[in-house]
Length: 467
Image 1 (cartoon, rainbow, N blue to C red):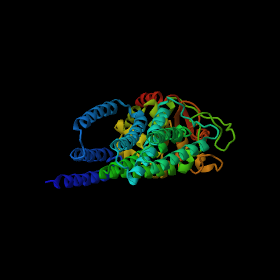
Image 2: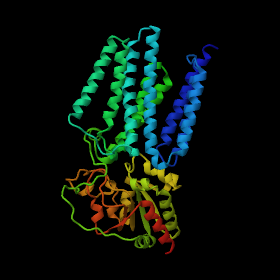
Image 3: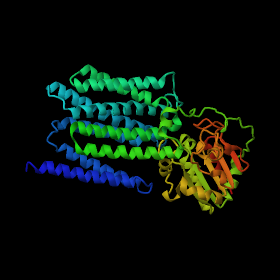
Image 4: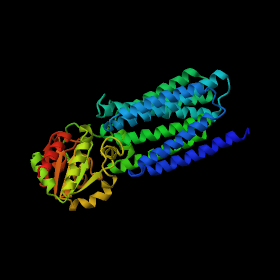
């Protein structure tokens, strides 16, 4: 009987790990993502129950109290958060995951220090790595949240000798860690390296512009998983190691996908202070574009859409800010009833987190079969009568394909300029995160519909109904 419970716990961990892997697989497609989330949640429930049965768990009352409080806060937050604010929610969850992992290392260090037991070298190294990664994830994620929420500027924040200062901080952490490996019972030095890790997290995110947040969120998600795996080594828990490794690996893969979608290296994203956060900028090639744009009113736009055979809708961050996804679906429904073929084109980095547009359109009950990835939809633009761009900017800029002097040259884009006609809904002529003018706005086949995405789409709906 004494061997049964430990064996049962490990077998339960194996089942939970299998469910995690299956859930991750299902998250790869919008059609199965919700089911994948449920599968992974069941795996986590099994892992928690199995851990609760572990003989090393001494205080069930405190654990149950924490579960109740955390579950209540999580349920309320998930229910109340707007889908447009989901990037901020993800950022907070990443930060809390990093903080939890770092606190495990801090608590274990404190326990071993109080007990007078020697700290094994492998546990000591694991704790130091956990504190570094968890601390950076915690403060970095909360700073990303502040940028996305508009609490601080979304533009890159830089100052002279910033990178040398960051290297100095990292050097201090390494020196403190080396001292703790030799003298592992020094509480002041341990608390000092904890503080340095928190400052490093802030310094890690402040030079990154708001337009790069999809990559940053993916990377921080990966770091939260790596921190959890390190915490698993600290407390010798196989399930925590497996779960953390899965999150870390999937986050790194997603980060690489995001970088490829922007045609930039991770080093460039993290250290080049790219973009202006939407401030006015120059032309794509560095010269001021002195051309005119053609603007239309909602009545003209409705006629173009209503008499088209094929329409491709391209959602962007402007749609998210205006919370126009429900109006967009209503417009698509009316067009379909008129016999128009409607598709949605999704760029990998549209919005402020991976899959941001998919999440918003799913909330508006847009069918998954209407959502097309960039590689699938680009060959179809030439057959589209109208491409309707709603709040997207850099991800539809032809300069990425044609202008070798453009900062975004080589970035894969949605090739809306190949459609027979393009309608762009935008508040004004401000630039995107890259800080360059969009050549699309000046094309002969492009017309601008100036105004809030929600207002303009609602007016298009009203006009389409009258056709």
